[in-house]
Length: 95
Image (cartoon, helix red, strand yellow):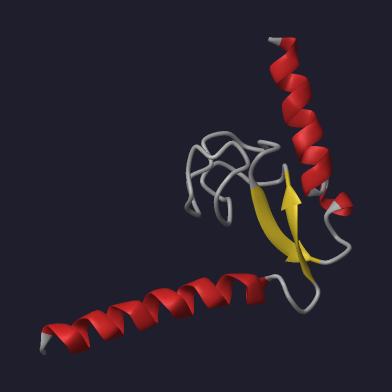
């Protein structure tokens, strides 16, 4: 394979992955923070300490999320991003 074709294929794959992420939340899905088991998060955390799925180090960390059916987050014991940020800020202020 020549380099130009290889580069084009890699770029196309990267763009396809970037485009798929927003679509994952469409169609009745939402991010639910604070419900991920260790290693069970769906993507980057709010603290910015990692940017990949499966890297949650603590269960039920308010900065980690999983994508769930819209309207089920509260039933699962989780919360939205705003509440997650409030919890994180309160924990930081405690020390």
